[in-house]
Length: 312
Image 1 (spheres, rainbow, N blue to C red):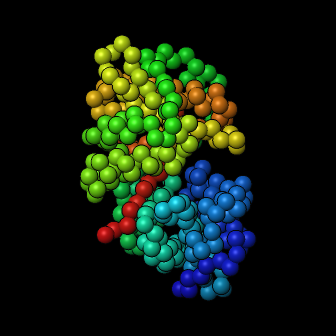
Image 2: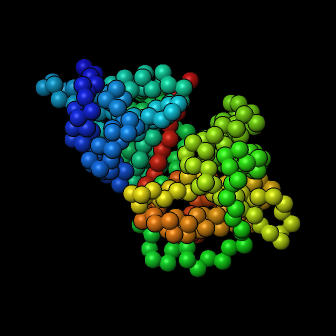
Image 3: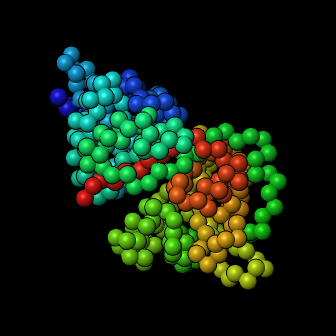
């Protein structure tokens, strides 16, 4: 089966808009709409060279795979197939290209609550495995319009402070304590590979890359005997109305006091106050304290997000 790439952004957009989703989910539908595709290509987040199609006998795309690029890597996150058998060869070509980047990942959005072993997602998961990917973690994805009054009446015991600047020494020390005994799968991989100190610095860089430093809020639990910040949250409301809760973390020595739930609730109120009309976040399904924190703060799970890493 012939594998080709689009000759232009316009051709890439046509392919992505027309290729049927492997199953129905909000993100699968959003990835095929012009309000996502055109800005993504204009900003360079998507490019023709990050799109691969397997052609059918008539020269039309039978399957399409596409990636979303960032500073250091490529995330394969778009999978469409009129012919499911064509998905594996398209994925193999995309995987070979993704492996040339310092960081490669594949991300699959599925209906909420579906595990990777479910019949509905098995075809895509199998194609990913055949192309050389392994499941790292299943995540709860939240993307919803907040109801009036959400997070409006919570009585928090935490006091928030913004950073003094991107080099605020409090952040690296707090990030190190958050990384200790972390339940986050990506952070555990970093620690196992690079050690705690290097992993801490990488995680801190990722937080600062995700949002401007002004979005980071340190949390203090005054009067509890816990010295220094006990955690932090980073959130940002965009002019589009989409509001992202990019990070919530609690220091290892401060866990068990409900601070994670309070941080999610405070961030929710902050996003709404900043004008966010759609709230968006993710957390590992196996990070049970954070899953409970989002549920207690009124965030409904809208999708399952499956993160894959290259085998070997």
